[in-house]
Length: 313
Image (cartoon, rainbow, N blue to C red; front, side, top):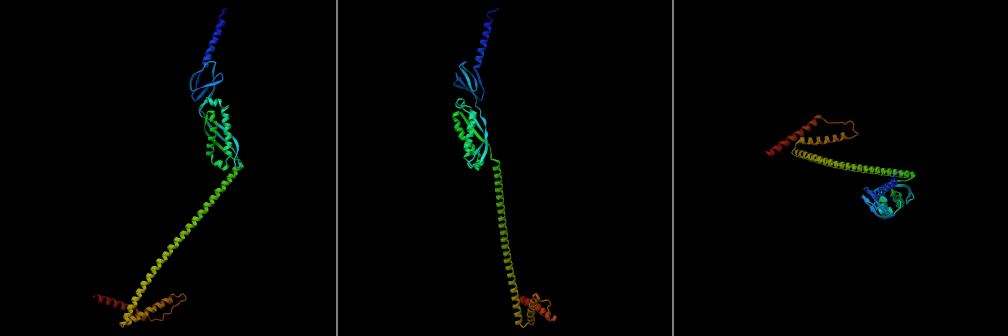
């Protein structure tokens, strides 16, 4: 029996342990992570991405910190607004570790601390606002929460990049009340628009009637001018005819007297014919007298024409 057999096994085991110990001191840090190193439980340094060798036995990796931007869900919670309306709110928080050592050793349970801090500030910020302001100013709420939470977590070596409120859910009875209010507002706006439309229509109709009245008055004035002009021309013609008859009578023309009498007689007959109470007109005239008058008219016109021609000659 070989007395050295047991020593060979022990030596082999020691060698394997030494190799394992040496291998445990070799650390490969992946991209996006930082490792903290502790020397007998005390933080000494931070390992960045790459290959690193630790002092055997004395050093070990403390925390493996994710340096990428991360997201945390903020659980839903009930918030009472300034006007005593209760709403249920939830959201998300985005953060990134900037200092691995401070994030590992300055706070216990980093993610839980961020969630609790965010929830507390959600109640504080949203509880200081009215419900209407709460529903319409979500961007302002996000900005205010980001400012407060980021300032509070700066000592932890992290940067809060965004806080987003996902949902604001008022109670069902409040939602129904808001729906009725919105319906009433829409009906009110519709009635106002309808009234405005009717008012505009009435104005346009009045303007149209006004323009029509103006145009009608202009037409009547134009017609009156033309009627007056026509009457003036008729008067001038009658005056001219009367002058011619007077000159003929002065010259001893008997036919002119007949024309004058016949003309006046015809006017009297015209007046009688236009009277509404006249149905039958008696004409005690002789046809020869009327024809003689008409003949006199023609003769007078002929003589006037001859005289005018002789005067030109």
